[in-house]
Image: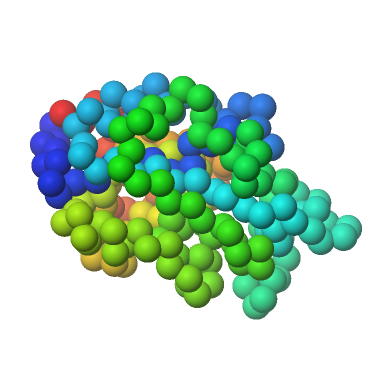
Length: 212
Ligand code: VGL
Ligand code: ZN
């Protein structure tokens, strides 16, 4: 059992939004199963932070912004590899809303990312070019948080990049694996690779039942 110290531990719930759940524009298999798993965990934490992918229409990570390209094609964009996605989480649309089953009342902070139409932003700390910070690192430090527990969508993208940055910023990090779902959970796919990288970075891999 992991003892939660509510002054030093934060629960970070990544992108539990309609577009990443069943019937959403970028549906992650099993995405709708997460809310009932994380809702009871909020009870243990003072610092519950929700994140939202929050793109303007016409965002450059959308395949529809690149003539002739299809979702999941890969291109070089501003010198880096970019996977092109279906239009998703357009700010202010129902797809960008939190999943209706998610307990949002216990959150002390909501972080929105992906607002710059030219740059994608998987991590909830920095955009993919590390040009802009969301301010989350500073907020966690101000709270006195030392350890982050991460769950949400998707394991191999926004959860992975967020956890990696948390470690780089000097926080202890754990991923609540049964409360995450990946875009590609095939053997040796992006989710398996992300898990391997997280282990290498010293991230604890736990399950929701370990928290109490
Ligand atoms: C995400 C792809 C594009 C995520 C966001 O939340 O994991 N993935 N935008
Ligand atoms: Zn996105």
